[in-house]
Image (cartoon, rainbow, N blue to C red; front, side, top):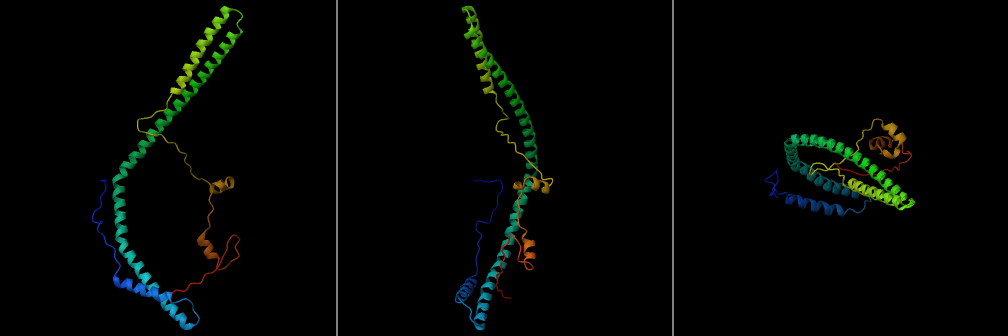
Length: 235
């Protein structure tokens, strides 16, 4: 499938790790796996050497990864910037027209809703008149009154049915291919007032940096489980 934005030359990109680095990694991992416990100073030195071996290679690969990836990241930024620059005017006009059409369709919808509401009220009124006329026909004391009341009831019922059909046919339509979506927006003016009134509408998160600053001096902080882990590193 063709696209409006193209990029060539990456299909054949090859990412390799040098064979000697694979060999060094395998040796370092094998030496590290032989360290299963430390009982004296000599074994501690062996463990430190093994740690130095795996750490050195891992750091080399991480440094190489960043070096190799930097041009790719820069290329990604160039792609993003090219597309962003090209569509800037399009997006501006898109947003403007969306607001214009949205305002127009919302106004038309309000008019249609008002007309539907008034039509429904008229249909309800005619239905009540039809029911009243029907009851009058039932209470008629002679044939002439009964016939007149029945005719009035029939006319009122037809009017009520026509009114209900008219209500059902009222549509809220906009330009072809458009869909009106109305969403509520909000802006927090006073977070403290919001939290006091509706704490369920706020999110409480721990301040990790502040906690890490405090716990070396105080490990008795309510709500926290604090422990210490020891890790050795090599230089």
